[in-house]
Image (cartoon, rainbow, N blue to C red; front, side):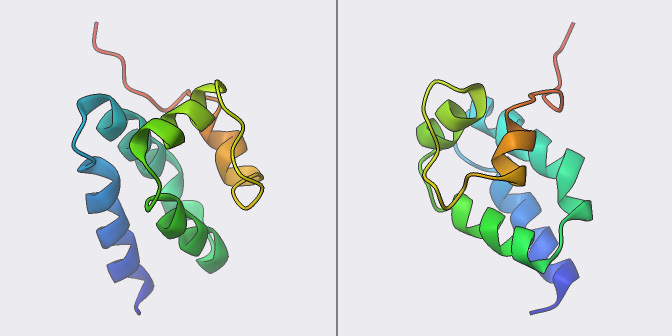
Length: 88
């Protein structure tokens, strides 16, 4: 599948999780990092999006340890939380 199509699909899936907080965290992370990913990282994020939102959010904020298959640069970058927009 074409890279641009994969990224557009991921953008939609990352921003339409069903819960506003997950949309902001997961969608914001994708917006901040997705364009720089290689094909393997895109595939890993596609797999990650199959997980439950509560699990992804717990891994991102550090209240749960992510499974070994997700440990690495993507989860480490997600844990920084500097990509979540905060309304003031």
